[in-house]
Amino acid sequence: MKFFKLMAFSLMIIAGFAFNLMAQETKITSPEEFFGFQMGEDRKLANWHKLVEYYQLIGPESDRMSVVDMGDTEMGNPFLALYISSPENLANLDQIKAYNDKLVDPRGIPSAEIDQAVENGKAIVVQSFGIHSNEVAAPQTAAETVYDMLTRDDEDMMRILNETLSIFIPAFNPDGQLMVVDWYNSNVGTEYETSPLPWVYHKYIGHDTNRDAFATNMASSRYGAEILFTQWNPQSYMDHHHEMPLVC
Image 1: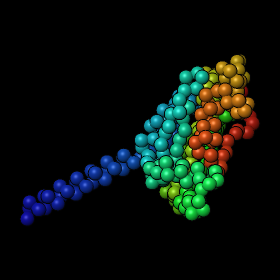
Image 2: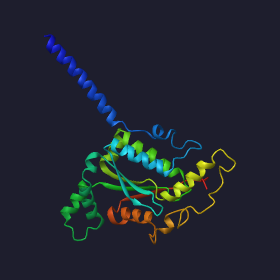
Image 3: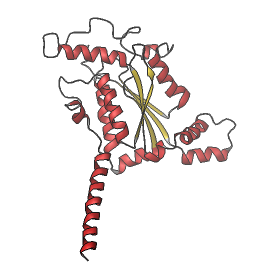
């Protein structure tokens, strides 16, 4: 009898340890924990290098997000795309894309296959942030929004995750974001805190990417065009801008 009691006690300890380990493994690091301040806090800005570190950290922590490095910008900074959806959807991206391709161009597709795509496909929603270098709030917002989507379990969020594939471009102009944020952080608390950047906001195209949209000369423009017009053709696209005043 003592042996069985000891075995039962041991199993309880092991089960408790396993539960705690699972809880630790599924914990998602919050922006405030990682950056040391809440996104949007006065006089606090995370630059693109730190934001990339954050996404690379929480990607493996969550089964709701896949982090894709699409390549480097002209100035050697990574351009990320964040795929956020239910674990089941993320495991079936090829099928979701196949359904979407049929709806984007249904010419020659049998009606039965179109009906199947409507019934089983997912809405593709692309959101981009920071297309203008000095609209610094948007990339900060992206980190908070991503964390929200990875941690909420309410009915509305579960419906979003189950019925849509969200693709985030968390900084459309990483080069300009770095320039502006690093300049601001180097001058915060001084008389030059609100002084404008004393050079153009990008090595080649100034402060934004959307002026390059018609030509897609820049790498970041091409990465965005690949997502929007070649690979996914989303049902919805939103670029998040930033109200005045700007960091300029």
